[in-house]
Length: 196
Image (cartoon, rainbow, N blue to C red; front, side, top):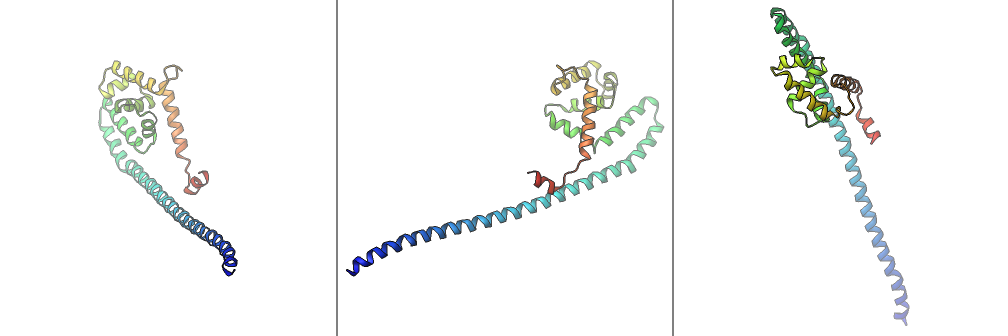
């Protein structure tokens, strides 16, 4: 009789032990998940700090390059330009413009926006954007005007300007203005987190 009375109590206790073990396993699993989440949050915070530091360093480098170009190189080019005959001064002007473009995001953005542009086409885009005619570009790059025209046609096709009839120079200048306006807007790392 004692065995019969103990059997039901044993059956009652066994499920409790199983439930209790399952609860402990789930609790341990939850604790491990919380620790992983905390580690991920810590890693994300560290990455935000690294990205902010990189952005600050990048801005500092750009400012240093701009200062060196404006304070050291441009005065030298201005002096050289005064010594050259009129026909050669255009090349110095082009060199000055190219140096200013080093810190301009336009070329990088154009290359990324249309990866199919060749280096020659990018050079021609720069000159067109600066208001040069096909004849002037041909003279500057030592190409025939027909070659420049062909490059311009390829650029227009790659930019999708063939069908809508948009002017290439106007389009490129408009893109430059957009780049300058976008460059003035800086997003702080905390704003990126809130947006995500």
